[in-house]
Image: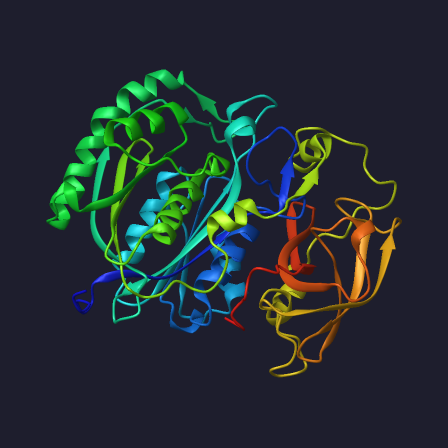
Length: 439
């Protein structure tokens, strides 16, 4: 392996998050009622940054389903990561292609930047998003290669054309699609031309490619381009993850690549985007791979519950007052604890970034408000000796017991008065993962 070229853009770290819930008859992971695209991005970003938030010059968040409009969602990601005030935060939203734009912006930064991508795909019952969609988050730490990078950016190419293949008007809830066969016929030729242009940008022959993978919202188009280029198909369970799809197939390709392998990742979205990444000899982080996460035991969600979580199926409200809306002044005063997970007035005290502990006591409350009753509240004794009372999530009430291992996770408590109230909860600890301490 040749020594790294100073200043060459590289992938320094990455993270992937897949919700633990599955809905019978539907492929892929699905968000729980307290998850949205912001919490998906947070989970992936915490894994990608792993102690280097203070070095970031910029944070980018890309999704097609932002939690807020007319407000920067990336600023919340910035707060949770505890980035310095001078670290910029930007939303790059609109389409799946926006995630590539965010990635390209990070590549041009002189210092490390974070790109988080989140997909939360849902639509009318029986539609494409329900039958082929999935919810997931992906994140990449991008910066100059000074040694220790996971992969180097070898080349890129972009082709753009106007195509009515997938769209949604600003005031509409569901996506609209043209016949998938039309998109499949359009993308085949441009996909090959874009790959050729990326190889020319890298100065590499086609024979150097070890892997080609294709992502896109049009399943027929991705299959047609894959067949034409001899590309490998990503795991079927990943489905269409919206803005996170491109990032997920890149992560999967890098985790399966050998040192020195050159991989090409193609996105079909209003044109073709191609990234060439060369895997280095740096060992990957010691944690479960994307395919391991897909294969782990899932929590089963009732289909009617799933529709209610998405707001597709209205249900009778709980017969108690709605929760109080978020207070902007109160949130501002308590931001260090509420978002960053640091507990005042104890400097260096309880830190909820990937903190683990055990359930000391718990109560299953059928009266208190909860987006998905009942509310499970527990006293957690954390491994560092601190104690805190937090809600449990991602676990049926019948499975909660004293002594069970849990880890902190950032979730949405409720939505009231047009505002989302986010805070920390705990969920059953992942046995297969070893989280870095702190960010």
